Image (cartoon, rainbow, N blue to C red):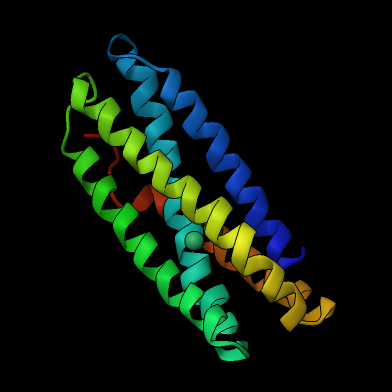
Length: 160
Ligand SMILES: [Fe+2]
Ligand SMILES: [Fe+2]
């Protein structure tokens, strides 16, 4: 699969999950917890395939300073989401702060995925790479994704 299509599909999946989580309340803690765990898994894998394969390839190929900067910013945006995510993991699922923190995390993810990546970065990437290069990259990303999915549940017991 084309690398950009793969990432866009991930973004849609994440967006859908976040929408479902947003609808949960302090009373639906179990659902909230299950969906959030799923979201964290999705995000962890998505960040990894971008950071290990996609961003380095884009940075190497970047012909403009702007595209290079977009990649550098993206690492920082991942980092920021990771910080908020870690904070949420230390916040009780049934507290009021949980929903507030989640909202901030969601807004940051949406900004990063849709405005920065899909809005600014991906069109430049599509011009900088040949079709078959994007296909190859996508295949490598899918392989890494499969590997990471296999190890995820064994990595650490989930849930707080
Ligand atoms: Fe990203
Ligand atoms: Fe992304």
